Length: 298
Image 1: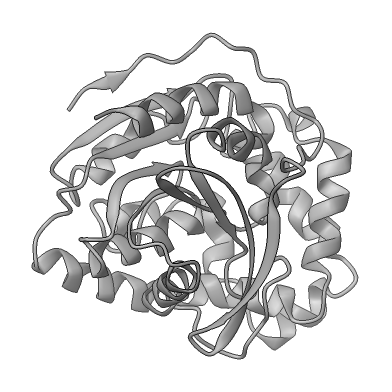
Image 2: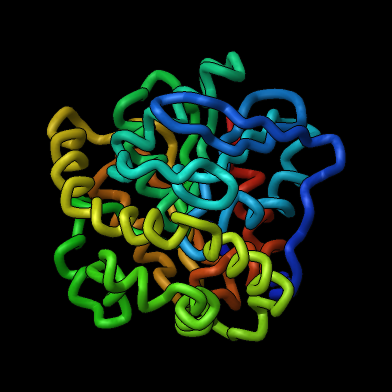
């Protein structure tokens, strides 16, 4: 139940940080869809799950840091990035099945999870459904539907996009994906200049792919079902796996640990300094410095 002191590393990131050259790409057909996955490194497995407004590409710096001691698995979530964009299956319980299928295809029995934003929600469903497969769980800067003060969090006007979606909205943003995404990159950053132009262009192009915005809206539209599912998971007991709950200094901060104590018995909190929500864009060095020792802990 300890709190981790934030490193003093200044935020420095304006570009997409590439994965190491020896990482390979796999397209894994599983659970009724196809998941785009990057895999590299050696040792105990770690799965990195991204959130909305980014793709698995966000994890380049962390993947490079972990690869000497870990097999690192980085999917694009269903409907996002270069993964397939099916009509349905955007509830997080179904997407937990995507993660299980990826690990099965790679012949990985157990793994640690490091997750951000919607990745937190997919990771939580996976951890709740497959408690014997998760060794550690680091969640970063987003609540989990149905857990703790979820209903109060929904009242925050900055989260208007949770209820935004449908065919009319798809037509509204068609060809304007960059305008839509800039709103989030700017409003949820401690300093929008740290979410650089190259990264914005990269992610905007991926979200402009056919079906990508529809799939993104579907991720949010599933939250009500996710809350029902998560309450059912917790009725079976809290997670007992070690949990690291990190928040950006200018975003959730230590409230992430408070939230996750409703759902897990062994929770350590920490803050990514000088960062809002976009931790790997705003302060990747500090994020890596917080995550690495947690994964190394016996």
